[in-house]
Image 1 (tube, rainbow, N blue to C red):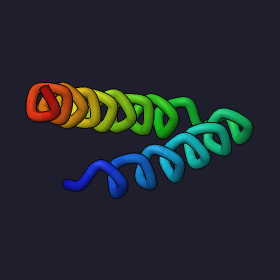
Image 2: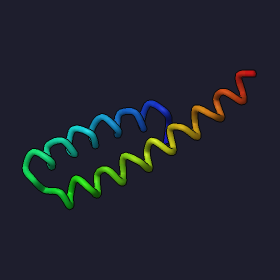
Image 3: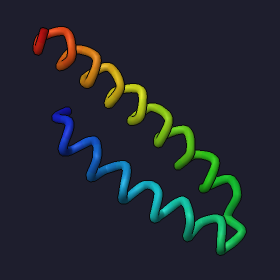
Image 4: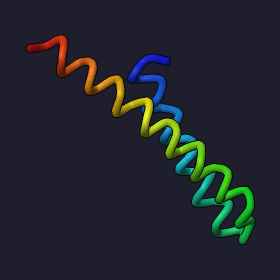
Amino acid sequence: MEKDQIIEQLKIIRDKKEKAITAQSYEMASQLRDREKDLLKQLEEIEQNDNKHSR
């Protein structure tokens, strides 16, 4: 996945997570949190690779 796609997915997931919390759908919010963590990890890896290649 491209960096821009991950950032867009993070925005969507964070919005859905907030709505799930508001609706007290804590199981759904937990699943979304886990997906958010996975995407953040992917984003971090991409940024680390970008930093290595820009040196």
